[in-house]
Image 1: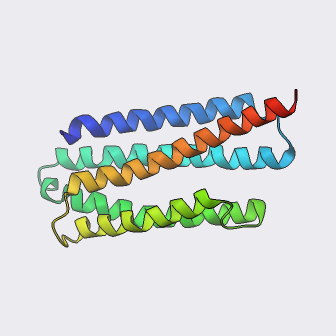
Image 2: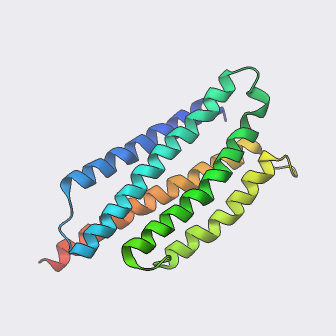
Image 3: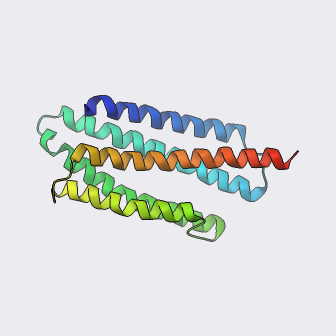
Length: 169
């Protein structure tokens, strides 16, 4: 696996997610007021994770192009991802609390929180060279974690719009 081929593809996928979020926002929501607030929150999550994934998938390509940074590419990138992941998750849960009055809305929120912990641990192992962890694979796993969050928001928006259209009939 060549990182110079895979990472730009992930960046393209994340830009497509941001584009879909824009289309979803432009078309609007036909649901109740609370559903509109929650869908706007989900769209915001999709845009933010898409932009962060684009940044995080192109940063190692930039590091690999600078000869002096090349040996430290995966350590720096993993450290950056390990710092951003819990910070962004905390801010997302805090915004969700302000929106609906609960930090954790569903079992899906628990799952995101619990899967994040070993992901951060693996990224820190790469960043500080603890153990024998494959650096590129671990970084890719961290990016796929964020991609998964964006896809979950996408699916929730689609399922909510199906529920709204079926209840309106």
